[in-house]
Length: 249
Image 1 (cartoon, rainbow, N blue to C red):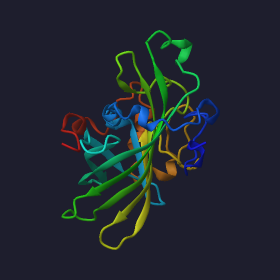
Image 2: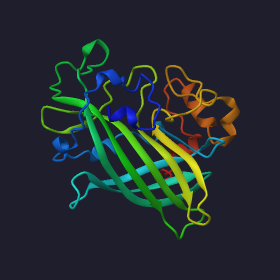
Image 3: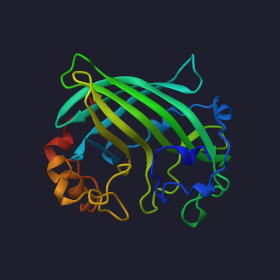
């Protein structure tokens, strides 16, 4: 199976390999536009780490456009933030594999069973995002991207959040590294929707949802713990910062 050969430890909550067909049907889906999948999730639910000490990184993709030259490639523009320092980046997402599910998943109590889903599966892509060289401490993000999608009855590719309420759900798993322009030093750098992919159990101690061990709070994770204990889940900082513009604006 092509999917099983990739270097990523998928938990069963993401996808069970036995649920997947074996054929890479990339060409079958080249006509469709996957752009919205990487613009779907609110920043508050995107979690990332950089370095062995699990320092928090925020990555915000702002613009995605399908390439006019390569039908499986997407041009990307966005911003990253580490320790309060914001940097711009541009780059590409290059789809390499699309594998369909053998059987559709319709969520809790089959709530999506009558929503006209025509196909459902996972995608695998390569990504490379280059930060602005004129900004301090900048570099390149590079690695593999894994995600879930479905095709609706309007022939539109949609972000698959059907199992959003399931324990340990996550999507858009970016797994790779960041390399400095200055000295070529590499740091592990992973981020994803609702969970940090390949996060150590001693770091992510959550069961039903993402939660960070107190050991790592000083690496930028304190507000996540507070948010998870807030009844409405709306915490993003103090009240003053909540009223101010977003960090990427």
